[in-house]
Image 1 (cartoon, rainbow, N blue to C red):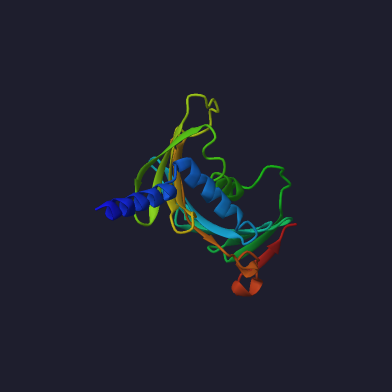
Image 2 (image 1 turned 90 degrees about the horizontal axis):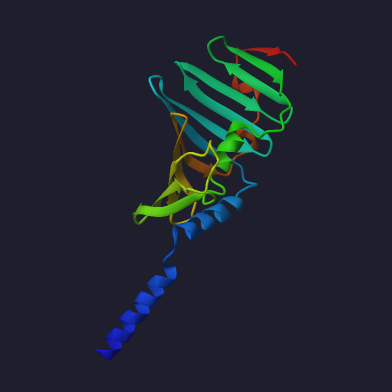
Length: 208
């Protein structure tokens, strides 16, 4: 009996060592994401707008290159963007419009979306609402000391246990519910580089 009690005590001690607070889990998530910063990433963003419905876009990012695709009002949207140039694909007109990228100091919308996963615990009280063998589900509630008006009151974050990569992040801002999901690391240059051969029969208009 004494040996059994010692064994059980050892097991519970080991389990306690693996127990993590939500802050520690999020910190591990940020470290995991930093480890992939040179690999490029893809993610889907859903925007649920009252009356209008839900619009989804898929973004692929590698260095200063970006490809965005999605559907809006039954119209397919595809754009390739690099440090200086934008290629807008119009499937309806079978056209490719080439434009000079506007110079802006602010990060792109896709970069802003990726940054939503950093500094989550700043100005928020975080707690684990549930977990499975695969993921943690964490709620982030805006703390009373957070006076930033544009910060959402609540964010829901799901993190995969095996590698600490986020599965999804959802927040409601100005009546619009935004969900970022399906993050994938390891993007090829060909996925974010415009190639005219992929659009046979399209008219190319260079407006630079």
